[in-house]
Length: 87
Image (tube, rainbow, N blue to C red; front, top):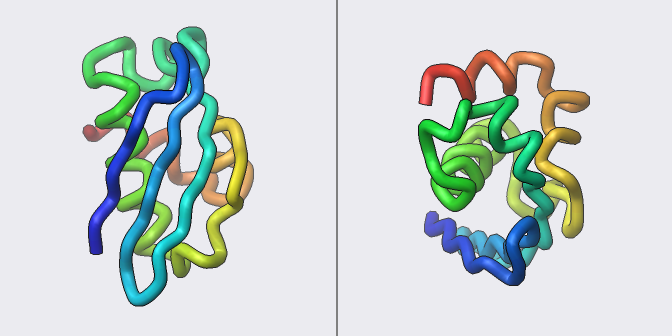
């Protein structure tokens, strides 16, 4: 499995996940959410890499939304915010 993150703008990133199939996801990470989740201790790119590792441990890449805001993850997985705090 590989996860690659490419910045498309200040807050918008393309995340490509390659497993048995390849999927592409457009994810928004605002400065406010980045600060709230990580206190800027890790970059937005690392946050996304780790977030996708978190998601892929729980579901197939083909089940991950193709476009979303990173804060949506905690609506599906309440333990996400706690996991981010450990990164």
